Image (cartoon, rainbow, N blue to C red):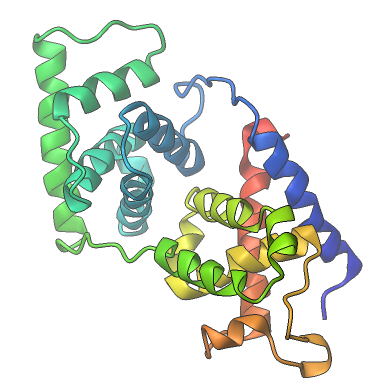
Length: 258
């Protein structure tokens, strides 16, 4: 059983999401270097490069996978972040020009700098990304395909929509909230610990909890039927809440949420 404090934590996530939806001020990446900030760097650079959402998500996953295999102190996290974006573009057939990657990642790291000329600094950075790409590929044993929770999330939400009266479904932004939670979960390496199906269910359930929505035709009280049992048969309630708590912990790491 989960106490009132944990339920309050779930509801508080909604307010954090509202705060994050506002304009996020630019931060100086040179002041802090950790995995959370590096993934934020990936997302900012990916958006500037007009990369597809799944390309950016793939870059975040590759970043976490790489540092799961090695000591983060031994590598420049921003070089690895820039390289995972470049590599993710190839993996997702959303090619990003290496010159664009170099200029965007360099300018984002060094705010206000001008695009690099075709001189030593440019060629050194280009060579570093090429070498880092080979390193990442070897470290991950060339297994860079990512099965994302996004497609499961979309499928589950489309199915759930049919269970609700249309007016009730339309008045609560469950789709937007669920995808927002999924995006934010990519900031934490814990996303690697769960199957895409379980992660998708957790994002939806967290959105349901935030808005206090009960799925029609289900009753989880006293061992009743859980809505997600239709989609996944191997997800226990304890595991579901564990994933939800991991998602909520992301907001405690967000500097702007303090």
